[in-house]
Image (cartoon, rainbow, N blue to C red):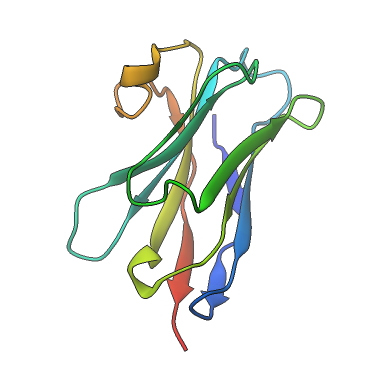
Amino acid sequence: VQLQAFGGGLVQPGGSLRLSCTIPERTFSIGTMAWFRQAPGKEREFVAAIRWSGTTIAYGGSVKGRATVSRDNVKRTGYLQLISLKPEDTAVYYCAAAKSMPIHSYMSHEDPYDYWGQGTQVTVSS
């Protein structure tokens, strides 16, 4: 199953963007969706995750207060909005989906996620 992520691009510092990730119909029952990112030369980093029921949300420390994760059940699409973007937010952003619902403290791990998107580049630069 290939997730499809959209919304990356070039953004000025202080700007905002919204990424979206759609899960194809009739594939699997979504338990949790997450966003990770990987900057050049760095390990992949957890950004945010949401239980598909909307009951539980987790954010990575580097984006807390600047990120909002949400989902649309009907469209089977998850969203990640980032504001007050900084050059250090530059990375390839990946969405991931799990059939399971890991506990809050485990939502930031890569293990629970069964399917991954191809990544979308976000560049924050003036």
